[in-house]
Image 1 (cartoon, rainbow, N blue to C red):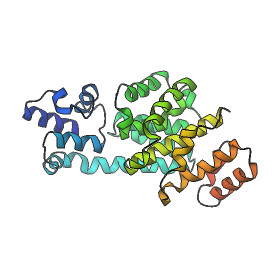
Image 2: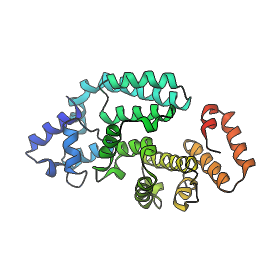
Image 3: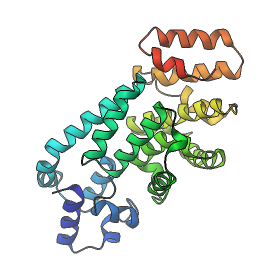
Length: 272
């Protein structure tokens, strides 16, 4: 039984409408697609729905266990391989993994994310069919709570290059208004996602020769917790700050540091 099927069964057993079942958690339109296995659901939203409706976590996991024991681990392995291949700029590997993900039972979001990663690593963003671009935007922004959903934030993070400058600024303003003050209070995964979105935004702005000082973006990166997990983002914060200040010696020094400490391919694609 899939998560969507199990949620539908629990809802029917309780005699609730979709709106009653997810009220205060996610929109009915978004939930409807989850029940039909058209959308994924974040762990956070899933547990909130289960808690709200007094459904046992243990019993629910038992219902879906057989469906996801093998499939989820296989999809997780493919997605991890894809991310590793992306940072190595291994175009051939990325293309092969994208084919595997397309043929797997991965969700629509995961398949679109794989398409985006391949387009990024092969510099073919402009070649993504308009139909796929529209689908990505529809998935993201028909969800009124996209800023609170780990899955839609991750998809946005990977798809930022398909947005026009005006679109990107519009959605970045929404994100910054929500997270710039209290990101430190958010879950660790959300902190990493928002940080990733911020460095992607700086990369895009630099690539378009439109890099300028955005106090909210730089403040988010600067105020990230002093943890090894955020070292990458803090390093990129310093790199883009050096670019803004025309400090070539410092920006070159940071690129050389990254190149000699495990990210030689990534350092080559940083804008100058």
